[in-house]
Length: 293
Image 1 (cartoon, one colour):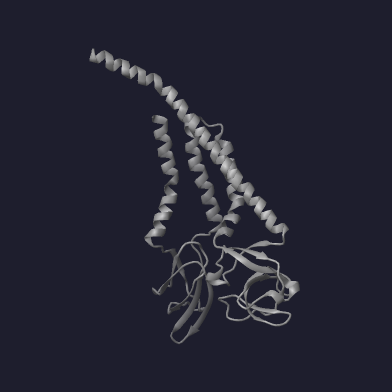
Image 2 (spheres, helix red, strand yellow):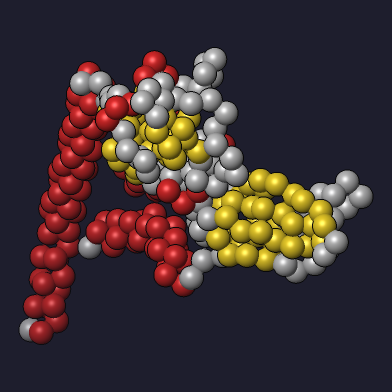
């Protein structure tokens, strides 16, 4: 009797598996649809906010040089509002077009006169060569969002790349589609990182020789904390926008000091990075368990 009962229970469970799998697939489809809806909504809201800001005279600009140091590291997105020289105060950060035209600069106001502002980058050694007048003024910086400019620069890689992965995998079987996308999307992200190099970077600002060695001034220009080091072991640990002077005796015949740049992060940063890298694996394991249940 017990054997017959066990056989009936197994048959009942087996008959329910297709129905359970169907429910799981339907739940996954609904979750996928909700995710796409949320992403599309966020994108639409972002576009509306950006257009509204621009229509009302605001500008958004990317910081591409390290002259503002930690106040606005490379990759910062700055938002400006129209203003006039008469409304500025010493210490304000403004965006302006240099006299004679050229790329827009974002620097700090150091001194004011009745019709001009005198500006300087926070880590620059001297004032900007020309005063800023109303005709040159783009606007006063009202917000600085560190790292967001890197994301915006990556969109031309991420949007078409992810769309291509999604389209190519639509013809794959249901069992393989998710796995291929979990591989394809990180590859797209890796391509954007290789092309833009936003993570680990530093720029050599100046080198100056002296009796005690060569002084190299370096600024960190990447997102992650880094260690910059000379061949003779002189090093400094920097975060985005931070500046350090390295006094080295390893300069070559031309007075140049080779600088090695490596990621140097506390365990909290490594934990976050490893967790982000593990997301595709965790999703794949979860998906496999749902398919087998």
